[in-house]
Image (cartoon, rainbow, N blue to C red; front, side, top):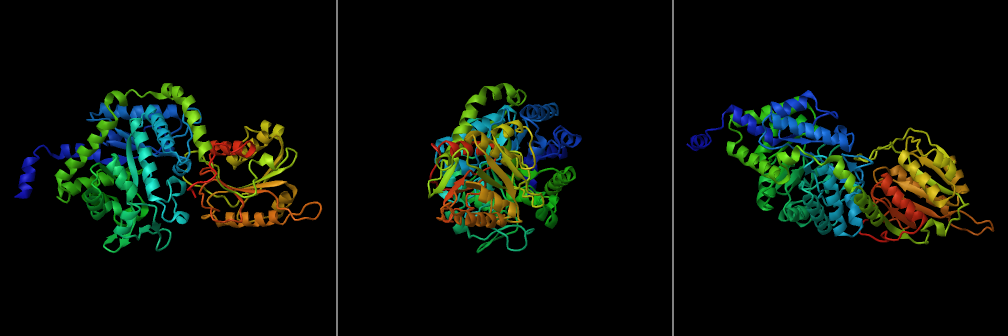
Amino acid sequence: MAAAREEESLPEWDCNELDRQMGQLFVMGFDGTSVDPQIRSLIEDYRLGSIILTAKNLKSAEETTKLVLELQTIARDAGHPAPLMIGLDQENGGVNSLFDEIYIRQFPSAMGIAATGSKSLAREVAKATAQELSAVGVNWILGPVLDVLNNARSQPLGVRSIGDDAQEVSAYGVEFMKGYQEAGLVTCGKHFPSYGNLEVLGNQTDVPVITDTLEQLSMSALVPFRNAIAQGIDSMMVGGCAMSSAGVNVMHACLSEQVVDDLLRKDLNFNGVVVSECLEMEALSFNIGVGGGTVMAMKAGCDLILLCRSFSVQQEAINGLRLGVENGIINKERIRQSVQRVLDMKARCTSWEKALNPAGISLLSQMQPSHTSLSTRAYNSSITIVRDKNNLLPLTSVLEPDEELLLLTPLVKPLPASAVSLSITESSRETVLSTDTVSWERSASVMSGESVFREFGRSLARHRNGRVLHTSYTANGVRPVHENLINRASGVIVVTADSNRNLYQYGFTKHVAMICNAQFAANGDRRSKPLVVVAVSSPYDFATDQSIGTYVCTYDFTETALQALVKGFIRRFDGYRRSSRHP
């Protein structure tokens, strides 16, 4: 009888109406920088209501504006009830989907902003970031990151997280959220219930596991999510991790009613849109299948199912959901509720008038001066001097222009600002640059393998008006070429990039420190050679190693961050933080 009453109360739900409704319940991506037949079919034939864009789709601000407008026009012409929701990651630091050196400004990572100690700056940066996205037609930002780094040294999130203190993550997360919303974007907190306390209990291909109890999570990891919900976050992404502790045994959080309906909806009182982790993740799709995973995610309480790229897998997910509804596994009222939540969120961030008339390059040009100034101010404030025991900073206080400065950097694969993580290349040979300001100025346009660090070295030489030696290092350790250059130089800078996951960097730096400490003056007296260690990713590389007397953190190694570092090295770190909660 209950089933009969449900059917009687929903007479309009024939097969065609079901298909039209279901399209609103998916977020899908595609390959390429232009509209292809697959994404067109998803919008026109499957009524896809939301699209995720990534770096592989975006060439420039101008091309992005054109792409988004074309997608929205296709949806309008296909008779969609509301514009598409266009979402992307733009976390700043090293994690940006949209990069344009002319129109899109570079800002520090979440941890870098928290290192400034300024919540008002956090909101300013978030608002500026969202204004730029809104200008190109984006209306949904997949942020802020609300994970608390309970085990900071072993977690892949790194500087994408605000930090390891739940209250601080909560406070800055809310400021980021408010800034995004003030610029007209809807937000998505991630990664519920937390990616900051994951463990890999088997091999590296297994699903990461949260082993904290619900009580432990409630006291720390859930605090930022709870506060963001109270402050009006629009949507929440639930991760694909497992949970294993007393009272909880879940293989994938986003497929679990205990996590989504019970913990997030009922316990934390979240009434917004719940987004699943991408169901194309290997462990999930292999163990469960995308069709079955889609049904489980909807039944668990997710409103939007994320599928990032494969057209055949995306079709499988849609067909799986249709079968789930037709077979009575998923209640039609559940579908109706989810569709309404999605449409309500769209109404807060877009309209056909707005979607079909993006501000584009004109507005970006107007914002450029103020956003450039904000970027400089943010980076100047984020760079942290953790220690300077021997007062080596600024370098001009201990080195004369005619004395040589040695720069040692890990040999990394060249990365755009949209890069997610460092990729260390071990096999490339080490090279040495000995250069003065004239020769570097001439070769500034020639970018090679580790272009960002080479430009860093060039800038150092220009600003100190003296010679800088630059060479790379790899897992091969300290080679004779390194020893010769260390002995030759009057001061040394060693750059590390997440040495906790690239242990050779830790060993190399300690070896260099030993050589510098064993230097002798001309009269035979022992004199340590000035050594500065700079962590350009995780601040935890040498956070507790007191033998490294001068230690500086930048939180990312984008060109903007390193330019701010150069100015501090050569002039003075006025406005830079000499202490911080990070690390």
